[in-house]
Length: 383
Ligand SMILES: Cc1cc2nc3c(=O)[nH]c(=O)nc-3n(C[C@H](O)[C@H](O)[C@H](O)COP(=O)(O)OP(=O)(O)OC[C@H]3O[C@@H](n4cnc5c(N)ncnc54)[C@H](O)[C@@H]3O)c2cc1C
Image (cartoon, rainbow, N blue to C red; front, side, top):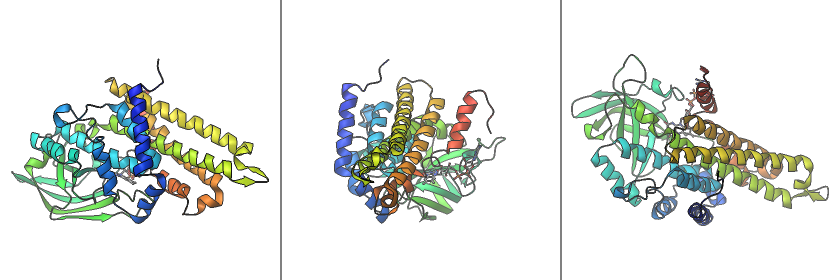
């Protein structure tokens, strides 16, 4: 048994740490969030350093990097903020999905564009009427021979407003016996006629932005079909484990930053002639939080390791996602209590952490949905 990072992994961790210090320190992430800024230079830097290509096969110009390397990067980017980690994860997961299931032309597009720092991918599963119950989606695509005509609405499509974005959109092409049947995956350019976007007003996630999408008679050519018509449910599930591993890495990174920031504050802020961190009630809370974060980290890297070994890790991925996301919320809540009035000021980084943390146990599958999956793996029904 070995809990340490290999020399190569430790070196990657160091590079990623320096990358965050240089390109996206937390205060800058907060500023981007508050100004709804599109940090083009950050996306370029992520691409230039080769991280977007990392998990792709060599023939695509990639490095065949695995889940552990990706989790290390996600964790370090998470030190800046969850949204910054999502700048990486949010385009990587859909592009890997398209690369796996798509046509040669779709793969070529990824090679010639995203892997060269041009263009991004976003995912549109959720709709106003359905989120957790993704298979209940209703947005309809009618097969017209050489193209589809799409009508309906999507909700919460993260990154759909960024330049050169292709939306990986799940639509209904038929109604089978079961709701999982009849779902199809289409690649839709964000600027296709008939498609309108509206940025959702949200507490955070402002760097990438998350969008409502309205589709009225949108024409999507057949060559934008990914995989087989009506068979996209299995595509939707195919990268779920990796997505959970990477999200968990991001949560652990941001939870650790949050605690580090609270700890630092507790060492300089004084009350009753002593450092507030030396009050036992706060010291124990911070000690407990470090235990929580280490537990979340171990779960995240266990799932990453299992995936790297080709082992099924749906249960372990759900555990890591659940623990990591809830730990971020708990760390931000504690950080606010320790920073007190200073934290409540929207000028503090801690206030940004608190705002942003709330979405962690919601997006990418809620905590309840993770618990359902874990309970099912224990032989329980868990609706
Ligand atoms: C900032 C943000 C970004 C997002 N980005 C994307 C994106 O890029 N693409 C995309 O497709 N979607 C995205 N989403 C949508 C996200 O995946 C959904 O919000 C999430 O799956 C929950 O769906 P919902 O909000 O509709 O809640 P609902 O599904 O309506 O759930 C409401 C409540 O009921 C609980 N619940 C539902 N079903 C069960 C059950 N079976 N057992 C127990 N409890 C249950 C939920 O846990 C929750 O507490 C994003 C959401 C947010 C907030």
